Image 1 (cartoon, one colour):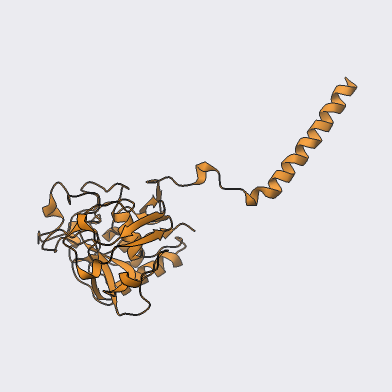
Image 2 (cartoon, one colour):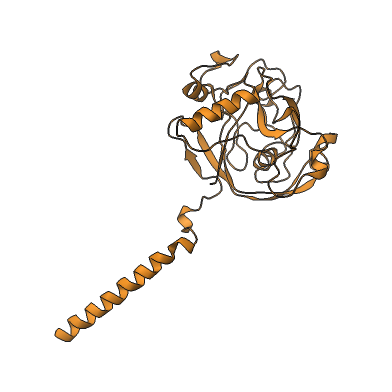
Length: 271
């Protein structure tokens, strides 16, 4: 029995030493698989209730190709882009979410309800919204870049004429064609990543400045847009658009401009 206990004690000491050595090296090990987000995984910001969907990084051919024709000059040339993974807002930011952060509701269609997208907000208004969110300890958020937006819209860079396929929705009149109002977010089918209303409802501000010739010189890795330019880019089309807006379509307004068809969705960086 004495020999047995001595052997056990030695083994226990060796085991503890090994565990200690492993713990010292843990910082160099990859995260456990269970901690790596999966495509479509959701995370909810606890104060506003805003839901985000994980979009794995990847590469894609950005811009208008034959499947999205007719193409505008500023949607060309098609060029290879690589983006890192990120958390994209599942929905456009709603009136109730704006109210929780800003304490007001600038929307023309307030009667549509709290689950309708906030509108009549400028790009500069959105920056103030983000600043206040982060000041309240809600984490790091920002507008998506134009490349991130198009990659997410096209379900991870697929050849999709609209955000999710070749049709806007089962009922496109709720997305565009002067129907007279916005509608609650999430009413229609999501795209392949589980993101709603990226085609229609309201136009969405993105981070980039606008340059109609930017695609000619855009860098491949995580492009941030041109360094100069007063106008900011808008994507996705809205209820006031005379026809469905393609996934590659680009529009622009001055950063201080707001109107009843302009809204946004947020991005949460991966780190």
